[in-house]
Amino acid sequence: MNDSLYLNLSESIKQRKEVFLLTITDCDNHELIGRKVLLNPMGEIYSTSPFPPSLQQMIINYSEKLIRKKRSGTFTFSWNGSMVECFAEHFPVPIHLIVAGAGHVCEPVAMIGKSLGFYVTVIDDRKEFANRDRFPHVDEVVCQSFLHFFQKAELTAQTYILLLTRGHKYDVLSLQELLNRKEKPAYIGMIGSRRRISGVFEQLKNDFPNESFDHFFTPVGLDIGAQTPAEIAISIMAEILKVKNQASGVSLSTKFHKFTRMGFREGAILWNNFT
Image (cartoon, rainbow, N blue to C red; front, side, top):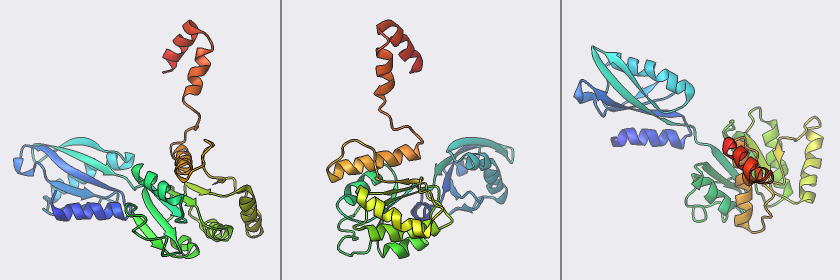
């Protein structure tokens, strides 16, 4: 892959845009083998070495099924009497984790989020907290007020928002902006004590009397007895994965213990059938 194509691919990923990298893996015309193009879901192609227009159109047409299913795959077609094999590698829109509040819990959350493949944005209104020295590996560090950030932040079904701010007034401001938006993220979680959470939602009820708030996750995280910032981060990210993967969050050993209580023979048979 040449530098120009790589930079274009990197820019698409950085801007959280879906793209396919297509490579001709076999062709009677050996000069075409290894040629690459980028294709977006709108059918727009980018290439540093132009393809014949008819070949380019065939590639677009035969990529349509993979684009629709949003997955990588191989397809073949006949072009000018030759068989062409092409591999399409799917680069989906990265799942976006926005962490508002760059305090002590944010650091392990951001680190775990990056290791899980999230596009991580850290936002705080304090320069001494929101800086690259503290978060060298995240995708974005934004030093801005929470209110202004959430007024314009891109929200999609791939957006996960975590409020770890230093005070309930910042939670209120952030949630007011999010509730005023037509776009809805996949997840909104908020850390805090029962007293802090109650105070936040008492204020929000005045502006949003018909809002049930059932879709908010607070107190945030799964109940694993977390105490330290690292443990709390694991608890939070486990809950986010539970929502993302639409899973139960129940210990995997639960079903196994149910079968073992039936006795060795019957339980083992049922367990083997289950697995």
